[in-house]
Structures are given as C-alpha cells and as structure tokens.
Length: 424
Image 1 (tube, rainbow, N blue to C red):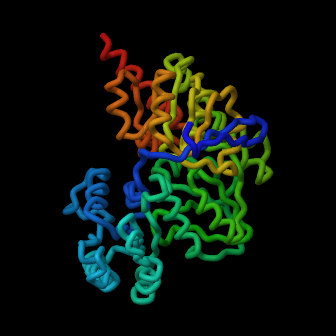
Image 2: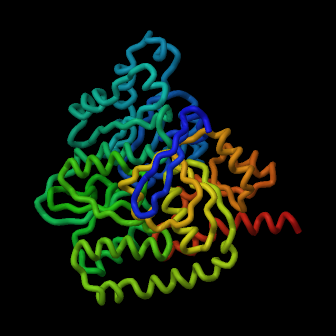
C-alpha cells in the first residue's frame, strides 16, 4: 500500500471497508462518452476544443471516418493557440459559424473542454453563453468538460447531462425521469414496463432530440440507470426533483429490485407488479440458468475503469455465483451504489481510485479466472496468462434490463470459452 492509501469503513449493513488509492491510473478520458452520446442525442453536435490527439482518439474509438460527417468533431488547438499568440475565442467563433452554416440540422451544440483547453484556461462556459445569444433559439449552445486530468471516461456523460439540466423546461406536473444514456431498444423496454405498471408520464434524460428532453419540477421523480451520474443527480435535486434510490437494473434481480423501488414509490399493488414483470423475469431467469454453470465458483478481479464495477459485482456474485476477489472503481459515491453494496456478501476488497502497480501485484497474486480491465492492461495481462474482459465493452454493449440479462452473463462466459479453445 502506498503512503496515500488508506482504509475507510463505509458502514451500512455490509460494513465493507474501502481501500483508497491515489497513484498512476490507466483509464480513458471523458471525451470517450461522446462516442455513445452523439448517437443518442440525434440533433446534437459535440465540438471538442482540443489537440490532434483528442481528434485521433474520437475517430479511432468511434470507428468512423471524419468524411462520413458524424455528429462530433474537433476544433484543433494549434501551437500558436497554446502559446497565446492567437485569440482562441475568435477562432472558435469562426469555426462554430462555419459548422452551423454547413450543418443546419444541428439544434444543440456542445462545446467540450479537453486537457489542452483546460491547461490554457480557455473559458468555454463564457464562449457557450456568448454563442447562445447569437444562435438561440435555433441552436442551443452548451458546454462541459471531457478532460481526463482528474476524471474517468464515463464522467463525460455525467458532465454532459449535468449541463443539460439547467436548460430543461419547468413543469408543475408529476412525472418520472429515467436518467442515463441507454441504447434505444433497452430504453424502450424499460419505459414500456414502467408504463404497464400504470405510470404514464415517463421521460428520459437525455432525450433523443431537443424536443423530447424531459421537463422537471418539484413534483418530478427520477431514477438512475447508470451509477456514474453524481453531478447530474445533484443538478436534478437542485431543480427540486427527488431521487428514487434502487439497485441498478443489471440482471433479473437488479432489474426487479429497480422496478420494485418505482412500484413502492408510486403505491402500485403487488398483484399488478407480478402481472407486469412475471414473463420477462422468467425469461431472464431461464437465460441466466443456461450460463450459471459456466461462471459458478469462478473468481473475478475488477480494475477501476467505468464506475459500473459495484453493480456488476453484485450481479455476478449473486446471480451467476462468481467469487469476488477485488472490485475496484475510480470513484465510489456511496449514496448512489449503497443498495448494490448492501446485497454483496463476503467481499475481500473494494478499492477506490487507482495505483496501477499495486493493483497489478494483487491481481497477479490472486490469479483470478477473469480480470476486468482497460484496453491498456488487457494485452499485457493476457501475455502473462490471465484471462481478461475489456471494461469498455460493458459500456458499449446493451446490458440493462431483463431481456439483456443473458447477454450480460454471456460477456463473461466468452473469455473463459476463448481460453478453453486456445488450450485445446
């Protein structure tokens, strides 16, 4: 343990200690979130103010060529900008004007900060405010930071959604908001289940375009579908909305408890809940039963990466019978993941933050059956004989809800089957 590491007792029914570490990290930056957000918010454009490295990251991660005109791009900061020899704001205004003239379909423009723009103290908040006055109401200009200096990659979505909250319309009506970006088909499944329970006013943040963004008020309630939305939660509560606390909807158990929290908050009867959830629950249980034998008793080690680690650990230990060695997460917001933590039993180590060398030592010592880690660690660990699962795949793959429960388990079965095939 390094000198900055310490143990903190989290309390609660599980009394799980947390190993806090601060050292070298191995994670993507928040710009990565643009890859799924630009597909989700279909009338938005994400303009990163950054370096050529930022542009290369986005282009390679998205798997699209820039001439395909995706809904993201990079305003490159050249050496003269970094040296203060040019007016970066003037150049940004010119690039935005050219972009909006060429792409009249853009209704929401996000100016996204990066490590270089933050280093030179480029004030994108003022830039967004200035540009909004020029282009509103046709285009809404917002800003958030995707810098990786102090964040991990899923916090890019958190920052983006938090920037949207102050712009949401006010309402005096009761409504329920699902918060977090999901693939459209998964979002539709969850919304349909909630409406079948009898809740008609259901919206999603982010909406699929500017017109479908939710309204919010003091009678609004919201429930998270992603565990990394700390800033968004605070922004929604500041607007007067109240959060429904629940485990996250991974697997049959997680989805049922997530829906049950909604059901109890709205006073829906047990009989109604059973009618709505019975069939999809049975499908999920049947799908997991087919794969449980492949995962039962297998050990797993999570490196901190996406902040999905604690809910996934709950799913894998309780629904798939896996044994948890260590569950690392870049940041742990106790108030958001407490319901999942309370369901986890016999966990040796939960770690927050990262000192990659120390965690590598612990991983090698325990020799887990599966190691969940970032792309930068996966190949070296595979070369050492460890079986790995890319953490980022768990963000890009539909894994929420009943219908995806089997798919989620399958993601962890595949590396084991791959290893067996290579040994033959």
